[in-house]
Every structure is written in C-alpha cells, then in structure tokens.
Image (cartoon, rainbow, N blue to C red):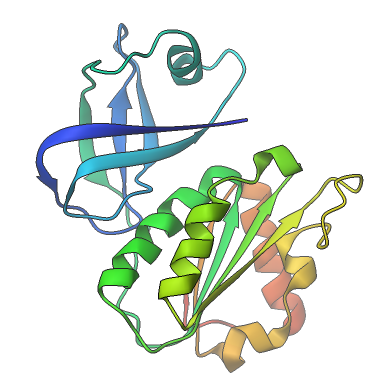
Length: 207
C-alpha cells in the first residue's frame, strides 16, 4: 500500500525537517507534493508515499520507474516543520503522514534534546504499517523517544485497535506544556482537535 523511493542530488539539500517539495511526475507536466522522510542536508532525498490505485505518481512508481530516472522538483515548501525542542513533543502520524516525522527524528538524532518525544502512528491495516525497523533504530539511539502503533482493522490482531486518540491520555499533553504535531488525513486532524477539546487541554503549539 506504500511506496518508498530515494533521489540522489548533486549536493546536500537544505530544508527544515518536516517540509515538502513538489515533484514532477516523469513524462508529464503534473506535480505532486511529498514530504521528505530523510534528514536535511543530505545528498540522498527519501520519500514515503501512498500507493493510490490509478494515481499518476503511484502508476509511474509501480510500473515505469527505473534506477537512474531523472526527476525535477520545486521547493522546499511548507510551514509544517520542527520547531526548537524546548518542551515535550507529541507526534501524531496517520498513514504516510509518518514521512515528515521520520525526517524530524533523524534530525533530532544528530541534534539531541532532553525533552521527551512520543510518536503515535495510526494506520488502517497491518499492511499499512511501514518503516517499523527505522523507528526501532531511532528509539535505540534516542533515549527520550518512544512510539506506539495503532491499527483500525479489528481483525488485524494488533494489540492497539482504533484510532491514535483512543490510546492517548490527558497526561500526554503535559498540562498544555507540549508541542503537538499532526500529519495525516483531514478526518484524523479533526479527530485530534476534538480529542484535545474533550480533555480540556490546549497545547502550547498545535502544528
């Protein structure tokens, strides 16, 4: 259900962890926006995208892409990026919304903070869970980082079923002294807003 790919740039690419670029689909004039899943200032630029049946970029990646293909992009863009880590961080990812958080965590690996970081990563089915090895590696090198996964599909056998907000408590908001980052489908973002209103805590930053 997911495609990962990397581009080799001529030189290190500067961007803020969490930002995106507009990639031109080879053979067309169409652009698609994707967040980096790689750290800033690297020559290898990685992406994590949803495999949309019939989608222009998905079709190219699944049936046409070859090593050595040339891709053009514009950017970086976006106000969704990691702010200075001066308070606890709560990251809420839905599906391929995990991509910008991987970029943020890779940056934090090289620029450590003593603030606690929690990532809640929700998907629809077990097949949608990706980059678990990368998350385990990041947890091993970031002592103040933890994460958990949630699957909607009740037949998945996953230990946490439902939505990420079903497995969060008011304590995860640290009395409001927290930066909350959300990246996922619009219903998830709205669900997070409603959950925060229900627990009566307003985070310092909601991004």
